[in-house]
Length: 395
Image (cartoon, rainbow, N blue to C red):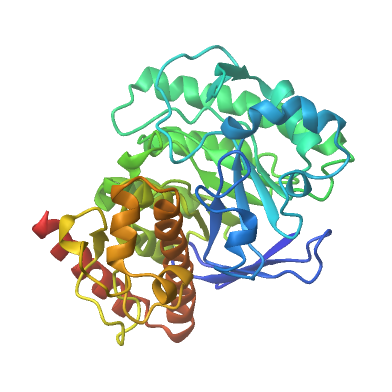
């Protein structure tokens, strides 16, 4: 797999593509793009079969190890890839460590080991055990192991430990990758840690730039501890760190961030040159019965940013979630019906909300790519920002 991008500049919006994929030579993923967040190998509330009603285009599945740990032994005896194992052989797979939808518990640190929280409790991974899993899963893309347990409040001691641990993981994981036949076609993404201290970020970047063979992209890690908190991070807090990193790393490499970033911050990060995100934001919204209704096109008939379909005012509202939306939920069902489903805790309720949210989010990224192509991203940014601020005022 190779990543092609232009323009090759430090901190600016850019268009790219992931192509020349060994197992799927006809697939071409345009960036900026979004990975489909999964839990246990499935998109929350949506089966792979149902997702085909949302989009038939090739997608990247984000597969957190925290939700797949229980399948570790089975995968050791399975000859296929993780994509085939979860019933989505036509999709690309991206193996990550933590689940961006769930808050990563702070603390619980151990030297040269990283904790993840599974259904069976806390499990520690070191570089060897992590790469054992990677080799058995055979993902198309994977993140090297990292200690990304930092946020804006982290102490200098915690940041220093994060950097030290991740340096060791980097060396061990890359060494194992270079010796592995099973991973010779996998796309490697190196996490960049260091919390909110620029000097720590720069120190770590200097370290990995000394040996970058087989590294295809970078993950900006350690900005938050996952979960809903990422939705409300102020961009002016993260911007200096993101700019610092992007000014130091090679421009031809893929740039990734994880987390449930709101659409305003998505556009802000795209403007800085980030290429790949995930749909955990869709899941976070669905869990609170909220549906995205912000306008993407000028012609969109909406005056709200998002709506909560549990609200009693929708009990006799027979409009679709978003007028003009062509997703299954909007073409077949009304707000009133979905409100009823959510009120009586029918399983179909969150399914329909999630279908709409994912469809709208994918459409949002299509618009972002179109705006970059036409040099109109700032217009979209102003529109989304205004809608977001108006929504915040009404809360």
